[in-house]
Amino acid sequence: MPTTFVSGPVKVRVPATSANLGPGFDALGLALGLHDDVAAEVVPDGVRVTVTGEGAGELPDDDAHLVARAMRATFDALGGQPPGFAVECVNRIPQARGLGSSSAAIVAGVQLARALVVDGDTRLDDAGALRLAAEIEGHPDNVAPCLLGGFTIAWTEPSGARAVSLAVDDRVRPMVFVPEERGLTAVARAALPGAVPHADAALTAGRAALLVHALTAEPALLLPATVDRLHQDYRAEGMPGTSALVGALRVAGVAAVVSGAGPTVLALSEPGPDFSVGTGWRILRLAIDVHGARVARGRLGHAERDPVAAGRKS
Ligand SMILES: Nc1ncnc2c1ncn2[C@@H]1O[C@H](COP(=O)(O)OP(=O)(O)OP(=O)(O)O)[C@@H](O)[C@H]1O
Ligand SMILES: N[C@@H](CCO)C(=O)O
Image 1: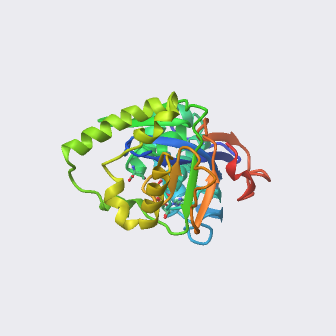
Image 2: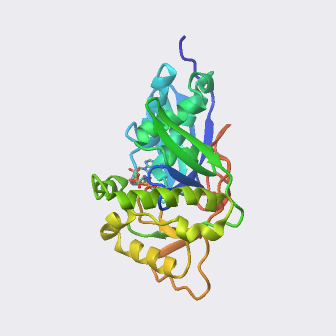
Image 3: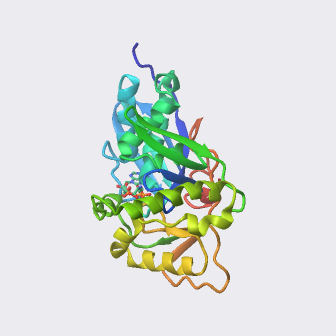
């Protein structure tokens, strides 16, 4: 069946995400109340991308932009490319910091392309959108919470990625400490060994299981539930400030972990008033986003175009 495109713009709001959460490497993730807003429409020719906020002046303005690449891949999956398309991004998620900026861009592209095709949600259903987004990203732990919201457990079967979303206990209060310096996921993944000791794998599997209970029902167990032996120690040399802050917070009794591939630190409870963080960290208290990516018709409104004000609503 030929592909027909809708006229007029569509938009999507996508949340930041924190992957791994300590022991859940490449599997667990949490959607956070900090968002990028992205709009797109079909145009007669070419690909144009404008960016405001995070990444403005640095990211490509054409087909090479990650949102455009995800849209292209999704149009292919939907049966055909439009003559051209224009994209407007208002970015608030810090990039290359471990807060899922690349997954947010990919999910935005997948959801916008689906919304721009008549019957797009039928041609590529929600399960297919997750599979495609995870395939583009390479692992599902950020794209799952970005699409579904909440606390997600993602896994990959021969047919592709799948995920479930669970409600988080109200007492969990995420806080992120974002450093100035960036860290690319690809670099952090290269620091990992090909194999780990059986004892480390066994300990981490047990803590990941405990973490599901701690996050959903018993936050008092978050400190033991966030112990990991699979990735954080191997990456510590590449992000010494992050490693030191995680260590100091944990000594103070706070369930702190490296967010995603770092270098942001995620704390699942707040440190006491006596805890001194030091300089150079942007500290954000963030709600948990329970909605995941939200699509609507129309252009970005005034509030959505503000790269700061709308950033912390969930
Ligand atoms: N909103 C965006 N639009 C276009 N490209 C983006 C966007 N956000 C991120 N990127 C691209 O992805 C890169 C960062 O991806 P990377 O996976 O290394 O980090 P992250 O997604 O922020 O962190 P993590 O995966 O650890 O949570 C950026 O350097 C940029 O090339
Ligand atoms: N699980 C991924 C998350 C970052 O994309 C990693 O730690 O490499």
